[in-house]
Amino acid sequence: MTTTVVVADDERLARRRVVRLLEETGEATVVAECAGGRDAVANIREHRPQLAFLDVQMPDLDGFGVLDALAPGELPAVVFVTAFDQYALHAFDVHAVDYLLKPYDTARFRQAFARARARLGERDRASDATRLRDLVRDVVAERTPVSGERAIHDRIAVKTDGTLRIVRTADVDYWESAGNYVRAHVGATGHLIRITFAKLESQLDPKRFVRIHRRYVVNLDRIVEIQPWFAGDAVVVLKSGAKLRLSRSYRANLHEHFLGAKGGDEG
Image (cartoon, rainbow, N blue to C red):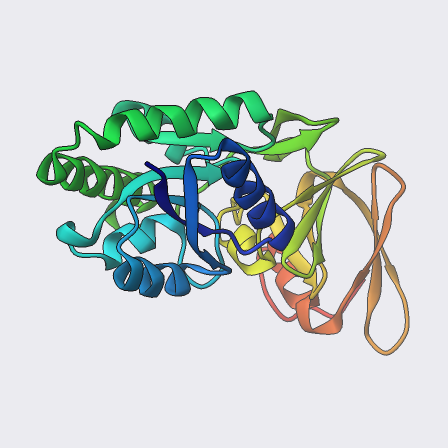
């Protein structure tokens, strides 16, 4: 018997790869391909699949949001697919929830699929629902700042030659917006990370990093000089030699970090 599956990933190539690997097993029928979390919720409710492959990081509703939106009786077995989530990986292990860490090979995919299929015959839906709800609760708890404080991340994971490398945010010279991605500049090396600029900025230490332009957030420890430019703008020079434009609208904010007061136009 084949297993009915819903696949959700906002990256088309990643989504199509999961579908292709499922089809190659000869043991799966993909009943829906979804480009976002809300579409996944609708299709899971409509098709009632036995299994779902959910990308953790989707812009409209992430994989945890999909779980949270479904009633216990609507939940299929789940395999999460993620490039990296420093909170989720530990939680997946604790709650015995299957996941695929991108980039994964065919052998690892087949292992996850076989494990998920083996569990289908022995599923206790009430127990599964509890385990998945506990997963969502723990992930949300780890993401939520204590006493209203801001959640600060001091490390990020970046892909380098197909492997994941952990980089301290303090080692990043500056961050550059690139659509739904951000490029972390560490010396002469740039690492592309799948995260929005607004979300990244909310997770950085505001005492160390400051926005200087709609495209740039800079590490204050890397600034060596601020040079005047045109129409109230300026150029920020970093230790690496990089020169970044400082917009007039962000200039007062930068001065506040160095001078302890807003509004200075001098310098």
